[in-house]
Image 1 (cartoon, rainbow, N blue to C red):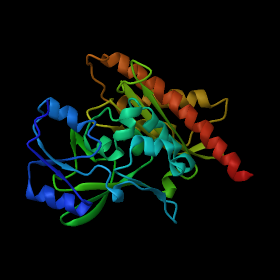
Image 2: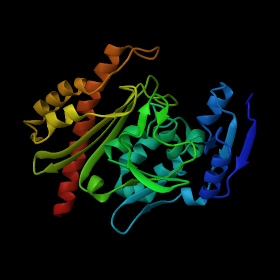
Image 3: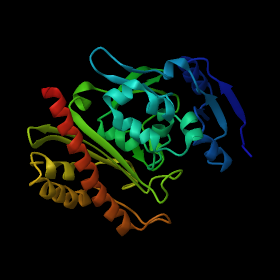
Amino acid sequence: MFDIQSYQKAESVNDAIRLLGEDPEARLIAGGTDVLIKLREFKGFSRLVDIHDLPELKPIVREADGTVRVGSGASFTDIEESPVIRGCIPMLGESAASVAGPQIRNMGTIGGNLCNGAVSADTCAPVLALNGYLNIRGPQGERTIPALGFHTGPGRVALRQDEVLLSVEFRPEDWQGWGAAYHKYAMREAMDIATIGCAAAVRLDGAAISGIRLAYSVSAPIPVRCPGAEAAALGRSVTPEDLPATLAALSAAVETDVQPRTSWRANRDFRMHIIRTLAERVIARCVVRAVELQEAASC
């Protein structure tokens, strides 16, 4: 049973902002895959403004300067199947494909996944690893902020009640020439939330790491980047002889960046083991992809 006291369908983003402003207790609903669960469990709100399928929130485009812009209303299926995503930032499509089952992927949106504040959300770590930016509109106009820092605590994000996330943008300098990968570790192979999610991106200068971003979900109270591990790997060689030592240094350093906890899903020590293992596995995959990009660019 759902305790819905008020429901209004927005005709546009500006209309949604108006409706939110008129009712300070109202909350947005898009795909509803998270909001309806909270409603069923009586989690503190029951007044809804529906932005599902607004055309202005759906596009996934590559702009003239190379920026990839993903509308907040794009579903996981939209992202997984998008030629733009497959051609430019396929790692985001990998993360979308790991979400739940087909029905959820058809309904759930990247905007909802980021804005619900869940530390286990599958697109959070990939967006951080790709150095994404969030475009937001409210009564005072539009603003663009880094995705890093958007999550402010468990279940909390830096989005005001009367604001709407418009899109997520990935600038060309943050994806062109970067090999990126995502791995979701869960207790089941499918239809399960992440025990740990790991995303990374690597840029090479010859055989040396010239840029690296490593991000996790479910390894701290909020999705995190790993500056200590990144610093430990930056500048190191990835030749077949040197790569094992580079990965070992990264794996050891990552412990300073994360704060895994014990829960009914997994204890802290097991989570730390998975975090260290995924650091090596995902970065190794990124290196392979970065080498492939180098070779393609030289042809």
